[in-house]
Length: 71
Image (cartoon, rainbow, N blue to C red):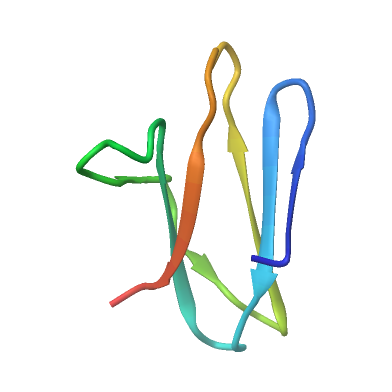
């Protein structure tokens, strides 16, 4: 992960990427959870850095993220 920036309602994620590859972001609320949840919409990288915004309005807790190459 290159960076994570949070505003009042959004989390902006960015990471080093390979151009022309597709990435998928997952999240979970607790590391003790068994399953990751897809953050809607895959990302097609067009350069060396890709990014995704998670709008979490009203989300009272924390989230953990991972970025994977999409199949």
